[in-house]
Image (tube, rainbow, N blue to C red; front, side):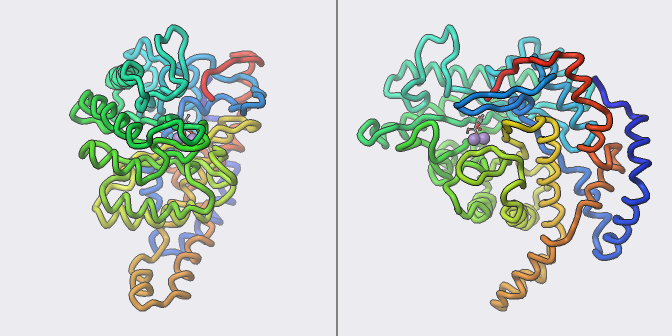
Length: 424
Ligand code: LRH
Ligand code: MN
Ligand code: MN
């Protein structure tokens, strides 16, 4: 199914007078509306292939209807999202959940929809049928060299798929860790991980990067071998220039100051990019901005300031990706909400008067510094986002249009009510 552009235009026309009223008011209140709109139009966030079906928990899964049954249908869904928000022009694959067996035709199909392939993700946290050795006790850190080798080869295979698709980065998340004290020698586990990653690094094409994700716990509950940003940074530093640290917002213990981590990684040229989601307790993978939008804004404050300080392009300087998996919402609506939340935080951060903030910091004027941040945070920037979408040919109201166009109903008709997808 494709979005009918004429109906979308009609829907936009109905909303136009109210939009114009709100937009004109806001544009009069701020002095950089046009510049922000251009930045918003350029800013895209990749969609993970595993988020297009309804996620489950270890207690069960309640799938929705019309979920994608194949990689092509996942790409089709990202195309629908992009047609509505004009901000999701790439897809990130998790292999072997998705195996692009016929890469040239997959790539051509994606590009017909205006999409390209973001980072490819390897998976050595589950055993696959026909796999010779088990990852029960870990993969790249395993005590047995043969298991490590199998995991290294899987990563190299993922790079090969990525090359065929036009990806430029390999994203590695390891579940490797231990469940009980005494189970593991921490130094050996770390050293094994490093040596395995060195082999993967050596297999990277010259224009590729490797992004190393960290996570404090789950599925292991005593130690994780790449458990925090320090451990990831250490590996990235030892590996070389093309290795860096990926920040998944859900991979921190409660109340961690993520914006400070982001600021320092960016300063050191070691911030790979993001897996955006939100959480209340752990790696909850909730819709971005649904729990703590202020934290997201503070992260974007560091990003805008830090990217500008390094002379990096906001849209392409680092990797932007969602990694959320909802149990009960329509996956497409959920992803539209996540993209919106990210762009709201970005637009608010663009409103911060960085010069005044620096001055307030220099003068130790704490109250003024807080006011500068909150002035931006409390501005309703949604008309800027809507205007950017309108100018880019998208929907003024993406979720409303998704419903009015009866997209899910059409997908159910095409694909059926009971569909099984791969992923979490
Ligand atoms: C691990 C993680 C990692 C995986 C994805 C499915 O919690 O965030 O990025 O690849 O979930
Ligand atoms: Mn992640
Ligand atoms: Mn996660």
